[in-house]
Image (cartoon, rainbow, N blue to C red; front, side, top):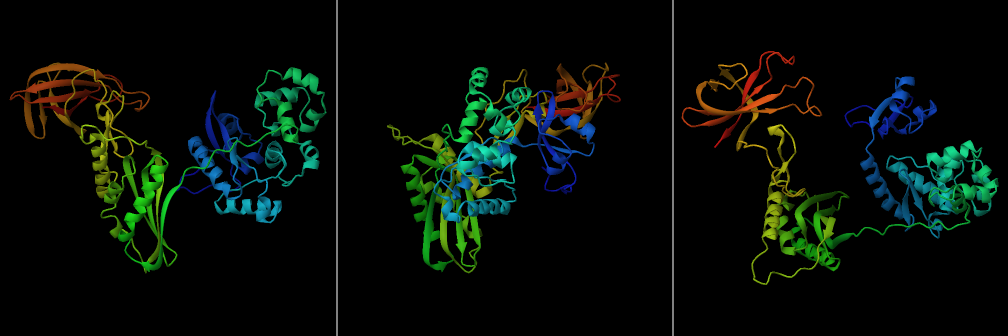
Length: 489
């Protein structure tokens, strides 16, 4: 995994992705160069780098990989209606009755490889009468791609037992017993082996997995249903350049589909398909799921003028790219409006007009540093959070960043008697403190110094929040420095 701003290494450079292990980072995935040097997934990164100093390691994005596999699982339903994810890096397709649509098994596998190559991915494929056999052949016998029901046992026999989908512990146990291949496992008496593995779960029992791979036991695919897809289309007899007259019908059609499914749209995408084979899109989001046609129409105000129609378009589509359940609800009996719906509608209109980064909610973080407590997030991506309970009074206004001041104090470790800020000298009348805030060692650098905060009221009644950074002879710098961080109103 390399950043888009970095140049990828050559094919002869070993590259690996790492993940957290019980005793430090371990190799999660490796390229061909690393595999040729004998590295294996699961090996500790420090051990691999000790032997191969030129090994380049990047952290693996496990969540991103899972999301990609889920998208690919639905994408592969272009070949058959039943697809599931197989382990972390595989897909299983039940192509019964579908291979002839692509010119037979060989044509189907060839089309799969070509389609994946167009996506920048390399696919290792195999076709077999059972799911377990196809998995084993695709992962451990890349030279064979098609296996018939009569020669399944023959082709599986030389493969290692881990090809059945066993875990590492069961594989090590079978290896110590001398059963290193599937053929050796199949030739052993079943009674003694079943007695030894009787306590294992079904998905870990080598005999049950062997029976499934050989077709002696059923192993059906439990394919998840297709995701709901809500789209409204407007096909025009002649090209036009203004989408506004057709927008109302698209919105009403989409809202009808959402109402029938008791869903509401959170993200929408309007697309025009121009006659020059180009297309233009406008995307909108809502603070909460909605299927109100009038509200959706208002969100498109001022958005369509920026769409370049070119020489005209003859097809418009409006999709709900993200939906959430919205049950049918009764209006309030007292006739009063729903305040939550009004606020959500206002946020939608402001965001559509100003941009999602201009309308924000406050977000809060549990931290010692005052400047890190409050942040901002787009209003459409998160709900407002309640502020955390603070141990002491905090000023309503904070300077970002804190401004350094020159202080005169009677005691080196005490409060300031007077200070100068922005060329104005202030004399202290009274103070409260100190409140000590230590560095956050899990975030800050080792040289970060502690802070002692004081609430200082000056002559004239103004109250300031100052802190001294560091202590004398703390070994983390020179003399302590003073900063003005906020004001009490």
